[in-house]
Length: 124
Length: 107
Image (cartoon, rainbow over all chains, first blue to last red; front, side, top):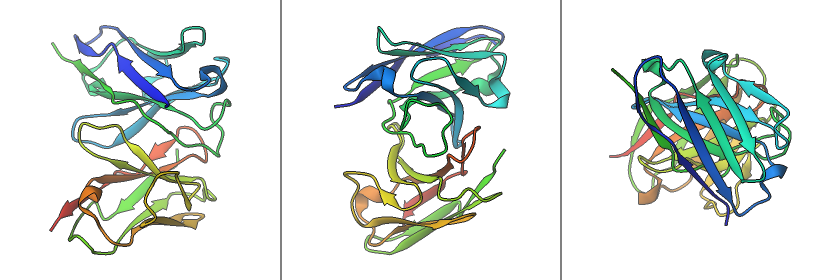
């Protein structure tokens, strides 16, 4: 069974940093791109970033470019999201999700499955 | 960026009803459109990919159609477990974007 489990969320002050992790199991991790998607409380879903299976290709939504960094360790079957220069508007539940293929940003793509999410709260 | 607009934003319906949710893209996206179901406190769940292909394990009462800019998700006969929020998502180009969601509530 494919499983994803996020960790690393918590309360952080504006301007602070946090690193999220997503532990994957049940599939050949390096064969799939992985994405982060977030949901601000009471709002809809927002795609944040994707990384290719090899880790060589990444894409970000504009609002996090230069502040967030996606990475992966295929030897540990783990996906990461480094969050820097955090703002109140980054407060959200962050989900990791498995993409359809190894290539990042391919059009024929969907997210399945998703992890249960980890809450990041940015507040002083 | 491609904007995705769902309608309605919320919907009240009864068990057994047929329900249709619409999703419109700001430009043509071919059939690169996916649908997800999301319940509070749970992981979102893929229902339909590539506009009309039912994900394995998803009940056949769910169906999707459309291409280009206009898409629909139909639930043929609502069951109690279907009350949730539904999102469309385009995968035509990054940034991948979602509709604002349609909250399906019990009448």
